[in-house]
Length: 371
Image 1 (tube, rainbow, N blue to C red):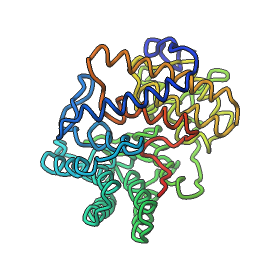
Image 2 (spheres, one colour; image 1 turned 135 degrees about the vertical axis):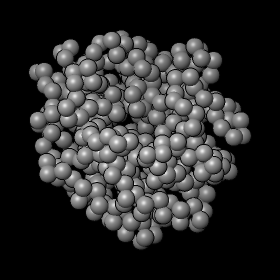
Image 3 (spheres, one colour; image 1 turned 45 degrees about the vertical axis):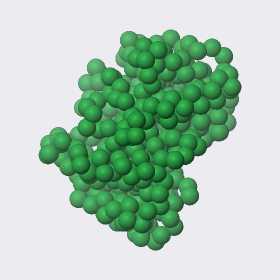
């Protein structure tokens, strides 16, 4: 079993018995803390997050915090949402070899999308449309940076406005993404002068397929050559040619993200094997967040509960929920404040807890989207 995960990257399950009231209290505490921590311009940066140039984006910056706060019922964020568009334009990504204005999670596309969601401003809608179509020129071929993320942006706008131009935009980008598939059904992504073929939702195959599957039937590629098996357990490497020390059990890379993203479409036995691996490995030492933390992994259990109806998976999601609440509280005590981001911090945890309580399985930002 050790070859499918490294115990050093995980920690024993803790947090006690499922307590719905404690989950509600944790959501309220995260929202209240985030509301109070905003200084009128931005949220405080966390020492475990990356460079502060990303302070406005959806993945780790203010737009992502507002995305979560809006979903969680917090109001009054219209002006800050627009201000993050202005902040990005004044200080765009420093990655000169790969301008990422069209990036869904790291660039102006996602930031403007959040601002439109709150304001319904026609000028912002036009800018989002421009950025979606500009994604046609991207060779990234993955959700966070490339054209598949543009598909998600167009899908969201179609759901929120009903305007035909968004369906046309989605179809144009989808045609481009479909045409860029490799012969075996996977995609080669090219970012920063590097070419790679990842499998997971953040930068690879299953994220791209999710962008298609939100709007209709899809034909899955054969992932058999990549799956790692040990009896009733299954994991996947990050991508083609990955070395053993690159194996992960995270949403971004590994079984949790594969199952959370496409568990409704995978062969059931294989999806269950990936969920079992996620449970056996346990909560992540890296923290509580969505991308490479305990709450992101737990979405695999929510999807399996929805698909199988087996209460075992709901119980496991609840067990991870209690652990993740404890992780947030420990981190806050150690640093002296919360971690204000969607994909690495407390706001993603709050969305997971809300989805668990409400019986929802949609991973944040990946849709399907509703009005």
